[in-house]
Image 1 (cartoon, helix red, strand yellow):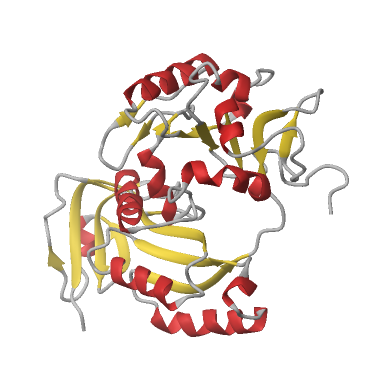
Image 2 (cartoon, one colour; image 1 turned 90 degrees about the horizontal axis):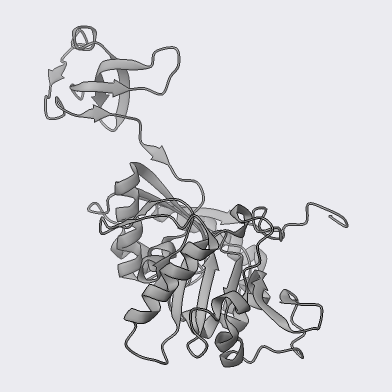
Length: 321
C-alpha cells in the first residue's frame, strides 16, 4: 500500500464553511484523502510527515471551466480591461476605469510601435462597464487616424476597430455581412459582432486570435494558471483535434512539466472542412480519449448555439429560439 503523506502548513483553507481551516493535508498516491490536525492525520497507518509546506498557506486547486489555450496570445497585445491583471511574466497591468483611460493606454502603446504600418492590437474591453458611452471607430481615431487599431472585447465575440482598420479590411457602407454595426446614415461604426463580421478584420490579428495556439501561447496560458492558483485549465473550443498534427501538438507540449492539467474540447463547428462527417468526428473524439493522460484530457466537444451573453449577441430576447 502506498504511504499516506501528511503535509502540515501554516494554514489550510478548505473552502468548506463547515470546516473552514485545518492544520494539514493527507495525500495518498494522487488523491487527497483528508484534512485535519497533524495529530489525527498522523494516525493513519504508515503515515509519513513531509514539512515542505510548513510555512505556506494551502488552498484547493481552482478549476477553470471556460478559456482558450490561445488566450496566451493576448499578452502580446495591450490590455485595456476594467480590472487589474497580472501577465504571465509577472507584469501588473492596472485596469482602465474609463473610456479616457482606454484611450490613454492605447495612445501610449501606439507611440511605442516602431513600424508605422503595423496594427495596434488590444484586448479586454467590456463596454458593459461604461453604460451610455459610445466606443467605436470615431473614438479609436483619437489614437490614430492612419494606423489600424483592433480591440478584442473580453467576451471574445466582439471587436472594435478604427477608421484606418475599416479601410484596411475593406469594410464600408456596402458591406452586408451580418454583425457589421452601422450608424443611422448606414456607415460602419467600427463594432463587429460575432465571428462572420469579426473575420473581416482577422488580417489585423493574424496568428494572435484566441482560437490559434502556438508553443509560446500555450506556455503563457499555463503560467497564467500558476499565477491564479488554477490547477485544471480548459481549452473550450480547439479546432486542432480533427487533425493528427493538432493532437500531436498538445501531446508534445503538455507533458509532466506543464504546470497544470489541461482539458481540450473540440470546437464542434467546421467539421466538414477537414473532410469528416459528424459521425466520423464523434468517433474520432471517442478514440482520442484513449490518448488522455493525467495532465492532458481529450474526448469532449463544445457546441455553441449563438453568441455572448455579456456582449449582448446571444438571443435572449425576441425572437429568441
